[in-house]
Length: 131
Image 1 (cartoon, rainbow, N blue to C red):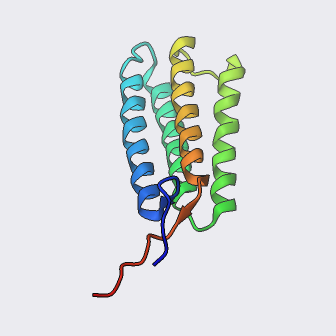
Image 2 (image 1 turned 90 degrees about the horizontal axis):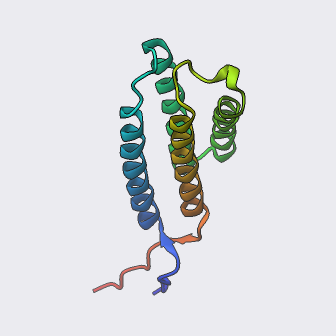
């Protein structure tokens, strides 16, 4: 029977951890969006679509068998979010700089934690002995 270290995820451990991370950061992102009051509806919808794409890209990295496709999709969204962060002309009208920074920080920490979990060693669970 193979032994699994407490320092190594099983595939189930990894999936559960990623689900928990996604649930937490999804709620946090929603709370951050709830504080944005001065954003016109059109810009709010654009922001929601951008954030939805980023969230899907983060989740895609941890679920897709096509790893390079998932990473390329994520890279596109990271570039778009960075452009909005660093180019004031692209920032949605009415979005306070502090709100933008909180949204980007939430996405960055979510992405970082997800990548740590995703690339941490995993193994198959130890086989159960036959009775």
